[in-house]
Amino acid sequence: MKRKPSDSSVKQTSIETHKTTFSRLLLYAACLGVSIGCLSSVYYFALQLGTQAIWTVLLNALGVKDFRSYTWIITAIAGLLVGLVVYYLGAPTGLNAAVDEIHREGRIDYRQTPGMVIASWLSLVSGSSAGPEAPLVDINGGIGSWMAEKLKLGRDETRILTFCGMSAALGAFFGSPLGSALLALELPHRLGMEYYEALIPVIVSAIAGFVIFRLATGLTIGGFYEFPTYAHTGVMLLHLARENIKLISHLVRVT
Image (cartoon, rainbow, N blue to C red; front, side, top):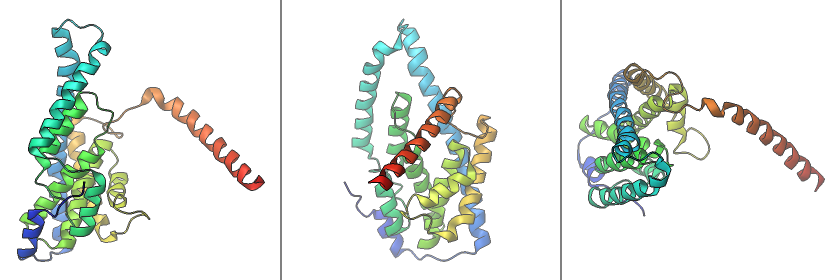
């Protein structure tokens, strides 16, 4: 399902916009990063609280000792609730649609952000295997677009602040500001980064989001995900992948 051009984007074309200086754009990027760092911290604590409430408090109150036998019930109820939220509040149609919007309009429609926040929270706390990447991009990219619209910035500046919103949230959750900034700029492109003019503001925003999130949650470099028990497995799979590449290369040469 493709996104229809949003009313806010149509309205934006009729609103007088203006360009801003690069130093002011950096200030906007820093402020946006701080704001999204705060919002990401709240979202993180909400995820922790929801997960604890569903999988520990609720099951203990029901006298359940082995949660595995009740997993399908919890996920089924959560799936129904997510469907109702999406039906009544709406939700973005995914990362590909967001990328198309960024290219076409220089922004992400933020009108369905509340639905995405609630649906993604319900999905994640109930055991969904999907990660927070797509919701982070949609929600916080939309916040960047909203901020640019309120500041009456032009399409190019709006696109930059949209990228800043995405990178600030990714930097907060993944604990890698530079990598998250590059990821936010590479997402819309097939052949690497193209919007070079956004690089510095996006890095500033990612660092600001990471710092605030780090101060609020205490998480170190590595962010939301920690896989200490799987480190040796990753090293082993790396060696297997390397040997597999050598084997395939040899077969290609032979044939």
